[in-house]
Amino acid sequence: MHLGIDSSTQSLSGLVIDVTTGQIVAEKSVNFGLDLPQYGSPQGFLPGGTDGEVHSQPRMWLAALDQMLSELGDLVDLSQIRSIGGSGQQHGSVYLNASASECLANLDPQSDLVTQLQSAFSRNTSPIWMDTSTGSQCREIAAAMGGDAEVCARSGSTAIERFTGPQIRKFWQQQPADYDATARIHLVSSFLCSVLAGCHAAIDFGDGAGMNLMNLASRQWDYDLLEATAPMLRVKLPELAAAGSVVGPVADYFVVKYGFSPECQVGVFTGDNPASLVGMGATSPGQVVISLGTSDTFFAGMTQAFTDPRGFGHVFGNPGGGYMCLVCFRNGSLAREALRDQYGLDWSAFDRVALAQTSPGNDGNLMLPFFGPEITPRCDFEKPLRSGSEAFVRGEDPAKQVRALLEGQFLNMRLHTDWIGIHVDRILLTGGASRNDGIAQIVADVFGAPVERLAIANSAALGAAILGAVTSGQDMGQTQSKFCHPAHDSRIEPTRGVSYDAELSAYANLLAHRS
Ligand code: XUL
Image (tube, rainbow, N blue to C red; front, top):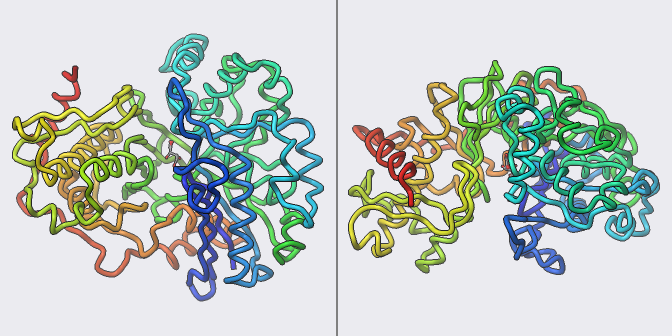
């Protein structure tokens, strides 16, 4: 058996697979808001950040890891786990001081992770991917490198506010003494991996590419980018390695406290999106994954690393080899939930039956579907912009509002992924909202391609478990073929005769002329 751990924005999950039977044996999830209310983060991050700052608490992730393993141990015999793989929300960074190595190596099973790692942080909070506060740092890095095109050619992305490099630069500028006291900077993924292995673990090529610090071609830290970011950075960064490569045996703490075997191996963790690519069985090029989570993401395997000329899309290392492209949209479920709550609706308003009260194209009623700052395209929106009938623009007719939001989200996605230039043959839909047939139908119609969903919603945790299997020497492709099947009856065909080409132009026009 192999365990996959995924630490996402709102929860931390564990999923156990048995490669012999091809079964998912157990799953357990700890929701930060509901299960750990003492951290004051109902949606997984600290509310009330100013100027685009969004931080979370690494101690909360530690508490969730302890709780998840203790609950998972009630469901499955953890001594049977041969290896552990993992993933984390991308870009988020954890800052540790010089005492961290000792603390990690000497975790006492009589105590808990939060208590013991309490004093190992040189920064109490972690900026996460929702943070948009580093605009000036991005401009400075781009200027030092000779322009955005150079940063993009080297790292796979232009300097991006949520990416770790600009975040590190801001920390160095604003808290230089704390930066100096930082001995190691981890990503969410490599931090949790380090805790499990009891020593500093490497960052993988998938998550590492989300930092604006790794050279995509050489898969090494890029010294010019490090220099343009902050002083003395190389010594503070872990090594780079392939996802799933062996870090070492699980720390004694987990053996004694939760009953893991001392032989259980921990593999290098990756980002949630690269893990999801693995879990969807989509590591080889040809299919597109759309993940509907707190943010919505669009990603696909690529053989070559060409980059987005407009600078919104990213290229990361693909845990299955080669590269992957990714475009992230910040107003995902947060926007769907905001509209749902504004109109006092429930999710049934987003299903196929309810959407049948409106028709594709929504009688010309369009919405720029942004309830807060967006990163694709980059703009500090505060509320959606409506265009269409007077009643619709006034905010009337909830059914049309729902369709306009969803059509707007996927038109925005189609518009900003055309640079990838792939013909979309099949869309694999994942994430919380993917089960909703109404949403799936609109995705199929807007892209003009069939949509399939896997039996399991948490593809990142499944991908993490498959990477765990790879750590024990299993073949990734063979393991994927055992677990990554579309759910029965999950396929949704695009509606015959429907094309969204005209709506796409109208949407692009509205976006270009927004006031
Ligand atoms: C990807 C991104 C998000 C996070 C959180 O670039 O910022 O998808 O990985 O899920």
